[in-house]
Every structure is written in C-alpha cells, then in structure tokens.
Length: 275
Image (cartoon, rainbow, N blue to C red; front, side):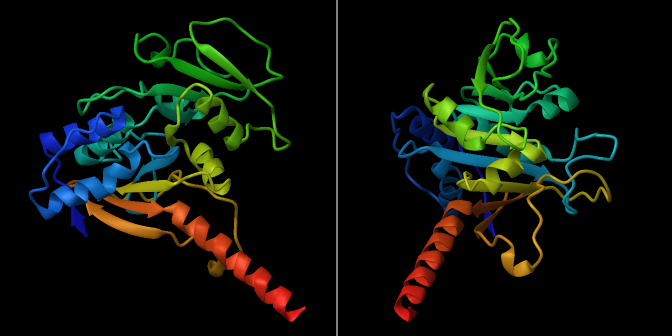
C-alpha cells in the first residue's frame, strides 16, 4: 500500500498540469511519487478523461437506510474528493443526489478552482431552491430529456434524447460536455449515475474511498447490471493508497476494457483459423 502525503509544491504542480502551465517539481520522497501516480492521470490534459469517485464504509455502504451520508468519509477522504474536483472541468451528479443531499459541489478543502456543476435531471425534478443554483459559484448545467416541458431559470438546460430505458445515454452526456470544452469529468454520484457510466465502459478510473466504519445496512455506492458467475465480474488493475483516515482503491477500468477487447480479438482470430 502506498502512502499519500501531499505537499504544497506537489499540489501546485498538479494544479499547473490542470491549467496547462506545468510548474516543475522535484520529487523528494517515495510518497511524492505516490501522490503523482494517484492524481496525475486526472490532472493531465493529454486526452479526455472520466473519473468516478465513491466514498463508502468497510461494508460497501454510502449512507444509512434513512439517507444519512454526512460522515461516511473521514476528513482525508473529503480532502481527496475535493482534490479530484479541483483537477477536473466538470462534476456530474444525478438529480437524486441533489434532492437528498443538496450539495454545492465546490472546492473548499483544498486550493484550486471549482468545477462546472452538471446535474442529470432527466425528468425535470431539479429543486428550484437547490443550494448550487443560488450560491454564486460555478455554472450549473441541467441535462434533461428533450420531451420534458421547458422552464426558465438561472441555469443552462441541455436537451438530450431520451433513450429506450427512459434515461439519458452517458455517451450523449459526455459529448454535450465536450462541445462546451469540458473534457475532464468527475462522476460523483449517486449509485445509478455512476453505474450507468461504468456499464457503458466510459469510466477511465474509479476511485473507491473506504473509511473504517461499518454501517451494516443502507444503499451501496455502485449498482451494476447483474451477473450470474464471478468469472463475469470486473477485475481492473488496482493500486491502493493510504490517505490517513481513509484508503483509496484506484481502479484502472480503461486497462480492463482494453484487455477485454484484445481477448475478443484473439477469439475472433482463433475462430477464423479454425473455420
């Protein structure tokens, strides 16, 4: 397990990568390299990048059955989440998260710029009194199905086609953000939103931040399509980082997807040779 002890110089270097200015930094310890290996893939602007982040208990819960999620992550887990926000262009949540938690989705625990707030509001349920609509922070984009009656507001509404399952396609969401120059994205919640992006194979990295707490019941942070056999389970490349109060599992889902494609290509070649 690698330890993460962020210094001011390292953090300023990562922020400079996000801005494209690249402030040099001299590595002074193994923990410095750990900081870079965890956060540099997010900060780099070499290609579009999608990160998902889940903060959960030891038993995989993100809240109690009544919806109390206030202290699931420890203080270092919160700092990690805010670092991720500071390194991306936009943060995505489903409208259910807004209704339940009324988040601001801003950067407060670290220095850096807050991201554009994006709410997947397929059926037009966004509360008019939601904190993020009135805090004077970064812009808010509401993503709604194109068959929802329009209404005026102090935020931009993006119309996307409703898919056969009743929701919005994650690919359409990312394309709409890319058209606005938002190409490095954090998918923060809730479980349905994160799961739709994972099922669509559109997540590059998944950070699962685990706090030493056992809730015992309540909702899970990820709910993927069911499988019948463990051989069908996702087995991403994983690096483990000790933040202090929490442990982060950095899951490389893009490498896993590439392995699957290579495996299918090998099977196709083998079948062609046998034909």
